[in-house]
Length: 154
Length: 282
Image 1 (tube, each protein chain N blue to C red):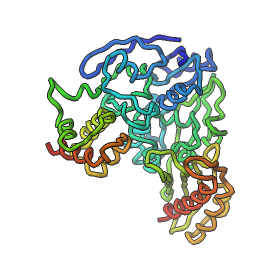
Image 2: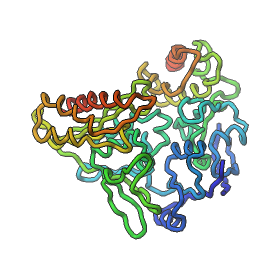
Image 3: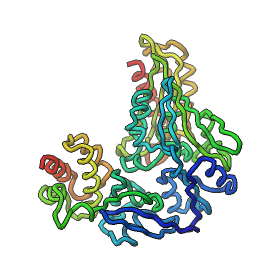
Image 4: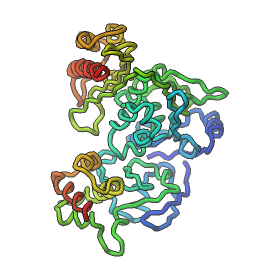
């Protein structure tokens, strides 16, 4: 068994953590960093609840070995709003009914944030391509799509 | 969950030295399949060696003959976005884009997919149809293995302990080379294939020569449609495609599972092989 020191920046804060080799990024984020906004849903990389940005790319934090976070810059749901000010995307999720129970919402917002960074004016097809991997059992997805369109033109 | 000793060598020789000392080590690439297998208790490694720190291991290079060298650690997303892949083998980029979801493609690697040898994976099937060569690292040698010889059975390759994949080479194409990857996912787009077909051939004036056809998810490894290839022969016209495609039923060995019965997969294999052939000459 081996322990490793990993250094990374999460939501603008530099961190140094000791991790056992078999730990996953989601364990470090939730248990060590106290960033419990990232949810663990299916644990097998399908549902998207645990989506976070690692160096700007959306990944499943339930599948990434924690050692792979060394040297990276990570954004979780807690890192979107600045100084209590929600992002236009977060506002749009509220006004357009982009969520109901909320369990998938952190992952939806992370993936949609990456989508808008790549495609500031996404088409319906681009939204569907990007968001198809984030499952939601409440909204029927139309509210999420509307919210992304609204944030895109804000 | 059991712990293990973890190493991140920074050069190929250092990785080889480690593997020589620890021949039972598990090689770690992107980590998607590894994490799943570990958490389900299907693997219990004592030593894990990751290739992530090796400089250039994720590089994609085009050679002067229109070929591609794809580092084992290149992610599927890197392949999808690569200008070199888009220029030389856009069909390979298209095949990589069908894998799972964006999140998986951002993490899972080409070398990892090949070494994992999941018969339902997409990239191994396409690489087989493109006659890719696998550049293997082993003590005192760096053999090039035709990828068709690498795949043995479900999750099983011909790589011996102490051997691992450095990169994958796809030779350049001719002016009349056509290729296509079709993936049938009736449940959801991010699923594994019920049946997939990778096909490549030389096409002139609507006639097809030197076909190479592999199928995914219908056997323990990428399954070559030998009977179909033999029936097509050289210079086949499109009207002969349906009869040739029907022969695929005897080239594959599907199982009943949640993605369909074996009989259904045989029928869909026939449909999708014919569709692939028609796409090649379209």
